Image 1: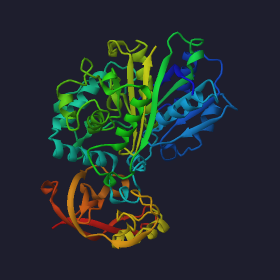
Image 2: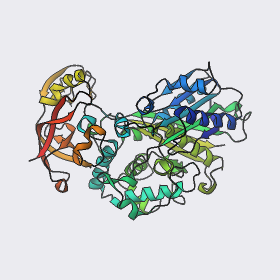
Image 3: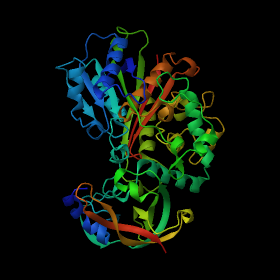
Image 4: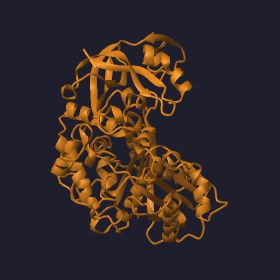
Length: 382
Length: 129
């Protein structure tokens, strides 16, 4: 397997992009990535998207995007792993380059969620339709059940959930691409509308449109295209049961633990070696549970870690410096790629007011469903 | 939830039928072709216990369109007395009373109406004992 680098990135603003179609959004991000990488062609395209069929009635996104990107006859494939579709797209591109099959590959992700679909219903298709969704459960509801179990088992406080959201909004206020650049308070979170008890509106990532793309190439030719390639140190993926109720523990995400162990092993690193992380905070409780399952904190201590500022910009391990899904926005298929872009900007010193000092190694954790899929990528500055 | 799919699931939804692995005795609900614990393909059909305990729950305030008229309603993960867990609505309950650890029994109820045809779809819910 060859060493692989990320050499270019592009993303749209995340938000309610009423004037842009799913094609416009993906192509805008992809063109920016191609231009920033300085490549004269691409060999292959991956498009991460969770549910374009339900959101805009369009499948076959690989072909659609290759055409509108002016890249026919380059092979193009849609990759779907629910909310981890972006991360899975990145992994597919990594393997195509690492194997030697292609040299220059575009890994992208996109979602267009504001064109009128029943978003709650579409997102719920990432759970077990017959034995979870049939009963009326929603995605906020699944994470709310994790939250109640975590609070019951470990004494995690309702305020701890709010503190995740407050922190991520603060980080996102410094991200020009973020959907919400507003600073919020714990009281605002605690007084926002209940969605699925105990989760409130400001515990939930928003409904968003957006696209993101990166260009990968073999490390040994990366210097030809840009002065600041970033090394892909590890990539891993794991699956867990599709239904939350099938798991031995309701407060541990086994797929995250397994993917993390694999990624650390591949990278030859341990959790303490990670300088900063982008994690899948689709709901505030998810960031707390994931920060434990990635090994940053002991099981049950994730809530206290947020309260003590350990995950803040100046903390022990800054988490979601981009603003996370909560503040940056969560156009589902684009999220995993946008996480990679935050790692790239941090590791190349381009993160502006969000810059983490001495950022050498970053980890991105992208998750599908209630944790039935998890993709982890570790990137390293050169 | 198109009709063939609904009818296919009736043994589970109406009678809580599950598959007990002949090799390791793990109970799969719904039944599966392969045991997730030991990979055996031999099962015995069993009926699940109809009583259990709430392991966690939530109250759905914002639902998909098909459940919108039912909000707010409670959904929980219940561990039945035979150790099998499932996701189920918790019906006929004062929502403020709900807490982890309460005992419930499974009951037969209407769950939803099929979208375009309006077919009534039934199944299990739980109520406090």
